[in-house]
Image (cartoon, rainbow, N blue to C red; front, side, top):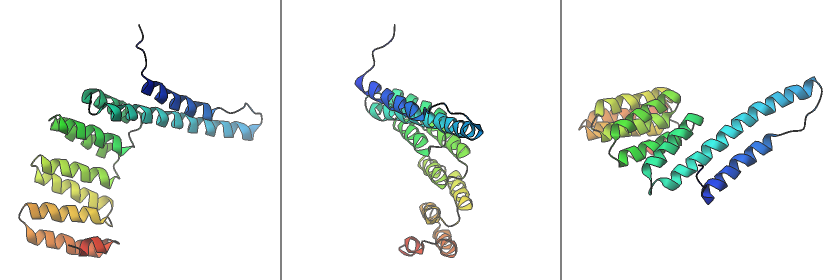
Length: 193
């Protein structure tokens, strides 16, 4: 027997239907229109995947406080649909941490870095979790990976300096900030320290 849908589920279903309906186009003839139709079909498939991922993600957001396990499940389904959306990984990892399941949060953020290998933000989130779990070596390694990805990102250098300061290594923190001044475009955030 099928479960009755809540008004929110119905609303989210409507979002998916609208995305799918927007993709439909009249059948046309000619080589040029066939190519256009093929391109439109590919975009529509991607749009429907995105719409479904957003609707599942929205369900997760609404369930975070009342049913955190269901929210995590929703986020994981959304991640399977659109692994390039980093926020999905972060939300699920946050819930795992709130539940005291930090090993799953860590594994999820490591997977996020594999899925999004050019993401400085994912590296910095992962480094933050490593630091919170008292693994400063991995935190430093992960921040350095973020610097390699984007040497002009001032946030990575600031995080590296912060990790060195927390470890009581003031000389390394100062060296990190001096190095940052050579590479980053946004020198103001570095000079404020």
